[in-house]
Length: 222
Image (cartoon, rainbow, N blue to C red; front, side, top):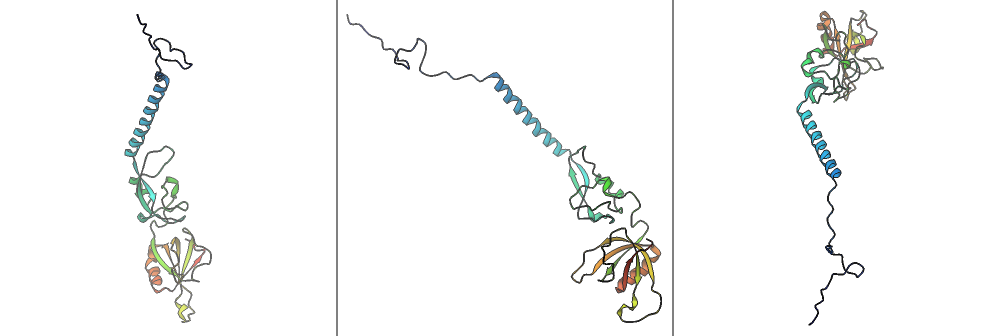
């Protein structure tokens, strides 16, 4: 009677594989700690995204600087813009609804465009223009001090009707004023200087300014 031989799969070394063992390595099961860590990271990421979205929708309207404002210059509505920011305990911007408390007050320091306006950005004293008449004076080269005028400086505005060649022996008329702002020189090096004076002096000052026959000297009573 012929003998039937059963063929056995060879092992790595040429010998037979142990019973119940196949040639395919089993897949490792994921470690519980790795799975748990992945779940936690996913939860934290989702919470962070929710927080950002929630803060983005919980913004407050505050005041920001629309254009550069030099120190001492009175703040006008053109100098301000409304910005929306997320609440932050480290910041103390002026709420947009309090704009009326800022307008007319002078800048406590140079305020760059885009900066948030805070309580410390403006001087708490009386505005330079409060109760005053503001007149723009076109100052030609040589009609203002060579040194840089600054908002808040006390000056004396002098009528100079004789500068066109007409001589006069009368004492020049003067008006005490305070510098509010200084414009950039134009192509002719002329600068517009806004000054605040007593309301009673406003018409005369405006008349002088309209002729261009005016000079500004420092050292006024303000």
